[in-house]
Amino acid sequence: MLCPSSMEPEYSDIQLPGAALKGGLVAAAGVPPRWNDSWIRHIPFIGKFVLSGINASRYGTTLEQNADFIASDLSSAQSEWVGQAVGVIDGSK
Image: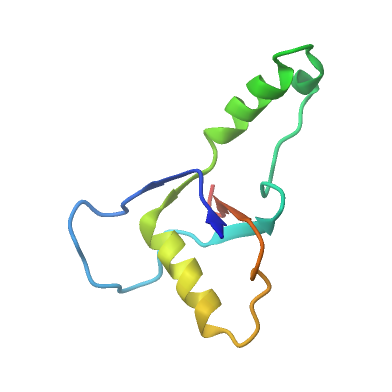
């Protein structure tokens, strides 16, 4: 199950796939990829929520990146992501 945080279209209109997308996705199963931990999480009651909010803003991807990720996974004979929750982040950021 692919778990992107937010997805925006890369283009405002429909276009045929062409050259490589702006950046590939970095994926991880079970944990958010490239999570930035901080001392903020130790603040009682609200620390973990604040840290989640800070990290959440970094997890925007495009529809095209996610479609490309799914298509490349489907085209491989062995998928490392089957049966797992997969988080993704834009690798170019």
